Image 1 (cartoon, rainbow, N blue to C red):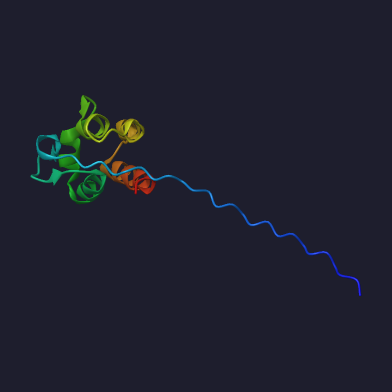
Image 2 (cartoon, helix red, strand yellow):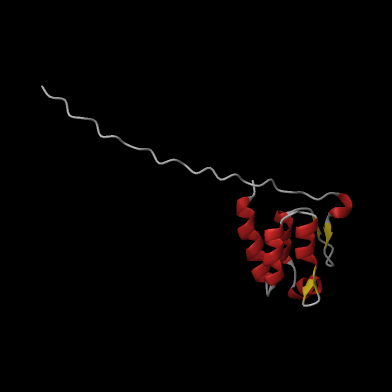
Length: 106
């Protein structure tokens, strides 16, 4: 009786993508939106962008300034997202950008 050689089965190595910790601002480092919303992290920002009016968005993000991008960069320490927020041309685009970026956070 001749034994057949076993087929070697290679298991696909799972890529482990390290998630970033979600930074939460406290006290005076939180973001106060002009419509009375108070934001502490990116999840709050995504939700706020979905709820706020375009007028409120333009108050904080316009050709002269982008308060959201500045806060994300300086307080939440996400320079990549900050750069994308500077390029966002609408509240909806900014919201989608934040939602997409949240996927890299734990």
